[in-house]
Image (cartoon, rainbow, N blue to C red):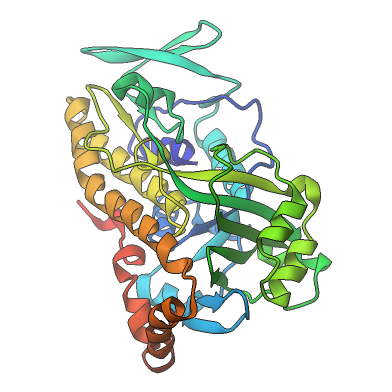
Length: 389
């Protein structure tokens, strides 16, 4: 998604993009994404927001509930209110739907720009350009190379050597359930975090309400596979959240065993440098973000727009454009990385005293000053990179 968005952004700035993707087709992989107003601003600037929103779900609110009982801790409005507050909608969308929409738009605007089945082996760069080397031996010349190739980035490794991830002690489950398989209104039409001892569950709707997206996180040490396409055992999922409220139990029982995946959450410290010469990184390749602020996708989307603008402002010196891009993005993305890490501790309070001291003040604030809670995220959702010079 970061590479496709970057391709649309640089094309809008008058450049010719090429995207090399190792998959042989754009297929139904992954699950849900949350895109806050900060990401929607970019989609609007690239003239794709309307088509993306048509395939998405607009949540009414963001809320936190206590997982074992289902009791609401706080709630603040999204929907029309957050759009009025920040000037763009909050969307839930299936990753595959976003990929398909971005890819189709790129194909219409730049026919032949997307190259599927193209696995990267490495790259070379000279003073005046770069050369991408594919596993089939093909080489492709370009002015600039951007590694938007995720947490296991080949481009990052080529620039800076192997990464050193840190296992967080958390494992995550993901699944989707057709809404028709559970009773109506079982899950609120919101972005809901169900927090509890040593874990939490996130639920929200996709595809206009046809699907329910589920992410369940548990503290565990025995599973350290970082791939999010590894199948998990449904019974293990049920056992992980067996003491929780009836709504979560019913939802998890409705999961199809063959659509249940499990992966270990690894963390990385914010990088001090993303670029070297005419090569740079984007999205999870340079700032992999834990899912506890729901901002990984939006950060890649923001990156794409800032990258394109920075290159357009330094046409004769793209190396300077890449340095300007990373300088503009490093502080914000690091803040999101570290904030996401902190949220994992906030969601997983165990013991009555710890839960009371943590969630009690938040419950009071949500009850008597709901606007205060919403304001704490203005720095995140209120950012509009399309308005900055």
